[in-house]
Length: 423
Image (cartoon, rainbow, N blue to C red; front, side):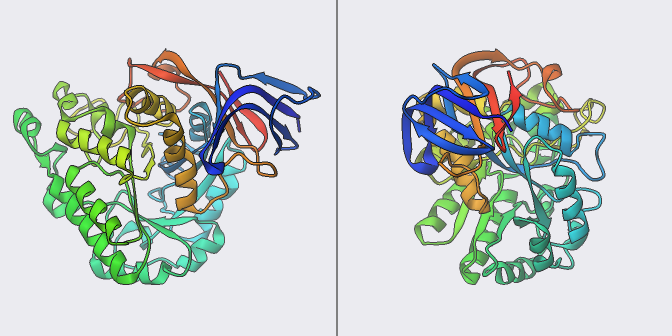
């Protein structure tokens, strides 16, 4: 294994609560030195002058489509995308085919992930086949390697099942990643319910469908004294309830995605299915409230909800599946639309995209420290680039950021002490 020296970098490390200029030495996959200039006996030297070195990003919400949907993407190709985006650890959601509801599927994911460029952490299903009827064997899933539980893509069908889940996991140190929607209120809605749905003449997805489920999960978590993580927050009303719950000591954390702080529902007016996801893009007021919740800490982390689909599937607006890709654009979107606009510091963005999600998942990541595995991203926070879907690294190209000028370019990604991406 090569000895790597990253020199002259601005090191931003929320996990160690420091920000400084200096060098990082990596020896046999482990960080051996952080500090002022060291003697250069490295096999590989990365001159990071004018660049940032930060802990590798942690994306806690990724759909790898493997097993079962590998024509869209798979564990290996998604790993390529993640590496190109500076992500060194990701949580793989369980809505595969078959679902990740037993130790055999968790083992399949872990075994195949050994060839991935990044670390893959399986999320186990809460209910068998995501059917919302019978709970899986949580202990078995954890022992097989699952780091969290979710039925993402589907809400847990009843309060009784979710409460039982929380009671069982309260002492297991496994977080529940909650997909919050009331499908009875959506009734086939494909965009946010409001002016845009009325103009397009399509069924709408009301904000109430998300917020009412957020209230349920928070209330149940308080009752069970359990942890709950709210996925892909998109509405101002959800933020209001999460903020109140935190003030009352409920063990709740929340994530949002770049598309919710960059875009609003008006982007759907061009009937491009690459702007369709679930939950859908909301109003401009919702977008602004998402940003405010990032500023004040109500929202803890930024994840992508990376969801690949084929070009054919996304070719028709009305019948296309929901979901967009985002692994290669998430850091740049955060720099462009949060940091450069003065909403938060680059330090806080790295915290939300690396240290905090690592802590929520309970994995060893999100920190640059001597003796720790070398998972590091080196990026130029000032470099502009245009998103060309055909130059991304996965099988699918359904990105809402296509053609956009973004600021912040990943130059190197190091995972397990090896350079797995170089611009």
